Image 1 (cartoon, rainbow, N blue to C red):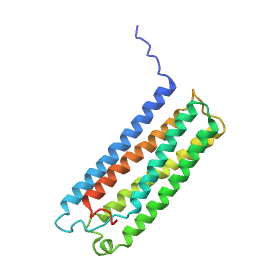
Image 2 (image 1 turned 90 degrees about the vertical axis):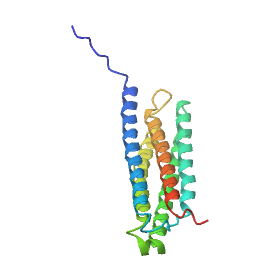
Image 3 (image 1 turned 180 degrees about the vertical axis):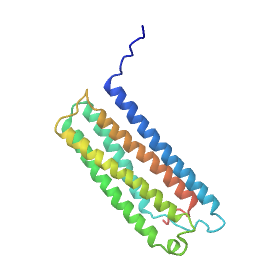
Image 4 (image 1 turned 90 degrees about the horizontal axis):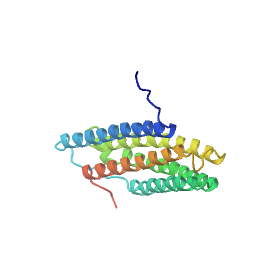
Length: 197
């Protein structure tokens, strides 16, 4: 007689799905960064690393780290059944996320309007910087949507010390976005002329 397999608790199954999602995104972004390095290496003789990175990248990075801190705070507060504090932390993170997008948009505009990009856009790594930064920004938009849904549900009391998996996943997603952005920023810094400070 075959043994009956017991299903796992719902929270554990949800976390396995969430972990698989984050791992697949991580593989995608790491592959993109590796391809970026290969492109920069292959094009090193054609155009040197003349593109300078916008300084606003550094400020937007601080904002991204602030978002991660706020969503972590939300996970701590929801476990203590502090619904309003958790909602406020998520709301603050959402506002910072919009600020991050505005800063990134301005940085993309600065890059596209620079003399280096206008003269050698198709030959240098500057275009790839723009592509990868926009790709990351699209994932930030997904994170903002998740924060909006989780924040609204938190405000109406859907999460508490026993049920908080969605808040935890939102926090994990933003930590993931931090790690990816720091890896990308490091790759950009190595392959370009750095920041114009």
